[in-house]
Image (cartoon, rainbow, N blue to C red):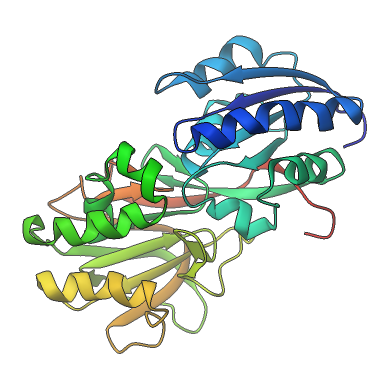
Length: 302
């Protein structure tokens, strides 16, 4: 990490409180052994990561975030100086970004990877004004995300989303989304609006862990990989999410894909969105990609 010596470490213990308590002394020992000055800040309420960035981040050479994709998203969204790099200690439920760039899941090993890592620049997605690092989606999966209990997440981890999905089926009222590419690229580029019941706007390959939603996506190419499931009705909409988790979404006759830097959409259910695993509102009806938007510390070789 070169001359970067002051690290503000933001720890969100909500999903894994026991692991977080064990991680704090282990990570601090590794970083101090590598010559870093460490300021550890433990979050206690929603919005704390952004407040910590605003209150104590002015003199930081780098941030280190212990939590999940949502916590990392919040920290990145609060950074005014996008040249300040951010590292990850994976403590969330899915940890998709850590999987995407190869960060170890053991806290001490992740701290060593941070201390000896390199800084890379990545794109950031925008659902209206809401930032996302990995993906945004519309449909049944987002509806299920809004119904996930924090207590169940602590007990079941990623399985909590499956349990919520099963429990949510009788209450889901599907509504189509119409997606219009504003510019598009690639052999599957679509010149016309697509009517879908489930849609993914991907900056990264993975979804909810190791499930691959967009195998050709790259976080530094300046494009979204848009995946549209066109089968309608409640069972049809849910089938699209099921095929994603079964690894069979790509190649289906009900799947349309294209790549674009910007898309517009219309939907009567703007609450049926999620970004990086957290509920979101559809905003102004647009999704876009911002290139070279943030710096991430990744293991050497990643």
